[in-house]
Length: 197
Image 1 (cartoon, rainbow, N blue to C red):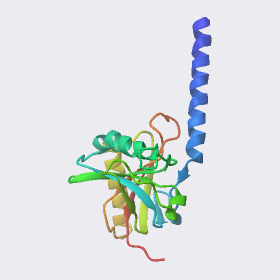
Image 2 (image 1 turned 90 degrees about the horizontal axis):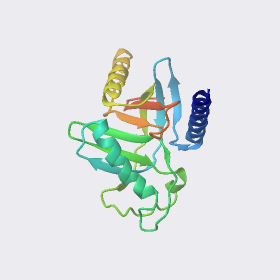
Image 3 (image 1 turned 90 degrees about the vertical axis):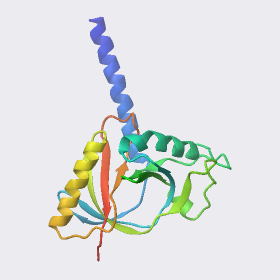
Image 4 (image 1 turned 180 degrees about the vertical axis):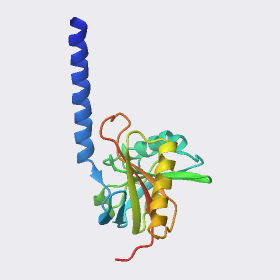
């Protein structure tokens, strides 16, 4: 009986913790975009220009990029800069992966579009302004891995081919959740496209 009570208490604590994490994820500032078209399997979005902190890597897959890239960028926003200034975490974390190498970007809070960002201590981190772009987007849940990313990328490419929508660049993976959030995870694949409104 005592073991059952302890087990129920631990489950309760776990669920409260996961609920707290999920609520904080909802409150996290997200990169702004405008929804252009929504269908059952995919969306078309317009992303305006945004300020990004980006690192480049020789990694060619998700697993190889995720840990090392995240640590470097996290150090920067948690005070690893000339002003020792903390910068709020936003979502999503953006990853571009190819056979020639990869990159990971944190989108900077919107207020920094008009303010100067602190200079990173790590010279491998670049502060860049993204170009405005139309993208097609597909979502999937759970923890991401290379196999899931590949399956969803191919699914989105097939949808675009079937609808005669022309792609204009390589895909990006967007991750929205902290590693310790187990419930309500969101992942997306986006591909830049030709689109006229």
